[in-house]
Image (cartoon, rainbow, N blue to C red; front, side, top):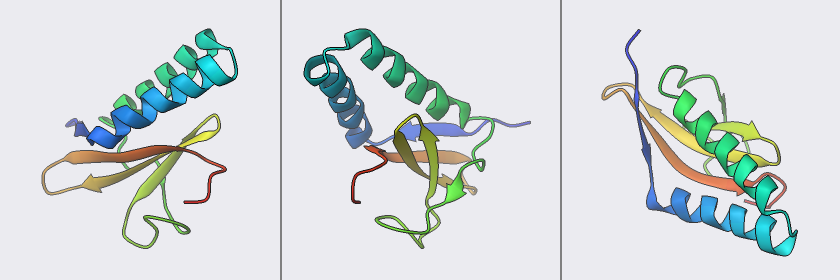
Amino acid sequence: MDKYTVKMYSRVYSDLDNIYEYIASHLQEPGTGLQIVDQIENTILSLEEFPERGSYRKTGTYSGRKYRQLFVKNYVIIYKVIQESMEVHIVTVRYAASDF
């Protein structure tokens, strides 16, 4: 089975930093922040082998344009699979309960 190349947009790095910062500083749980960010990153990397496992996004931002979503704890990873080039483009990671 061929692997897909996972590409993360610069916004994703900022999203992950913000997630960690919020959990570490605001909730006073730096260890938990690291664990959650690690879980999100591992899920993103798993898309190399299983890029289509997330469901199509049907509501909110990125809906109706073949973007997919995967949930990790309280966070959602938004991405698009580009079949022709065998790439997975990670667009953003957001708190799932946020209005976007």
